[in-house]
Image: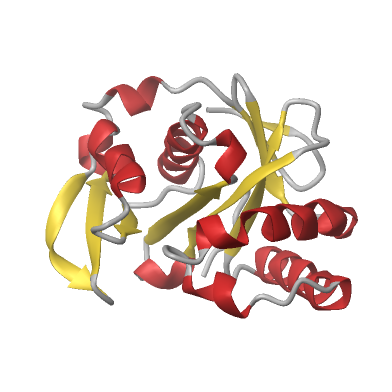
Length: 197
C-alpha cells in the first residue's frame, strides 16, 4: 500500500491535518464535549475513555498508522489551528485503489457546511493527489444529516450495505463531472511543501 502524500489540507475555512502529539488536549476536550452527539452514529465513542493517557496513545496510534500507510485519520481545525472542530479520515478499509471517507463534526459546529467542505476536500485529494480509483462513504441510514453530504456531492448510492450502513460511491471517471472537482484547496506534504493539483 502506498503511503499518503497529503499531510495537511487547507480549505477556505478549515485546516484538515494529520494529528500531532500536541493535539491530545484538544482531542480529549472535543470527545468529552461530543460524546452524547457521537454515540448514536459512532460505536467507538461508547468505549472511549475520557482520560488523557488513553487518548495520548490513541493520537500516537493515529500518527503511527498515518506515517506507515495503514490508515489516514485527520483532525479538522479552524483556520487559526487552535480549535478542533471534528475528525475525518481516508480509511484504507475500502480495498486497493479505494478509500472510505469517515467524518464527524462537533455538535456546536454542525449546520455550517464543515462536513461537506471536509468530504469535498478529501475527495479531491483522494483522486487528484493520492490517485485513488474510488471513494466511498458509509452512513447509518438513520443519520439524516450525514446522508445529505454524499447526495449533495454527487456520490451514488450502492445497493450493497456494510454493517447495516448505506454505501455511497464516487468513481474517478465520474468525479470530473461534478462540482466537487472545482473545490479550491491547498495540499501540503510531510515537510510542509505544497503539492501541485
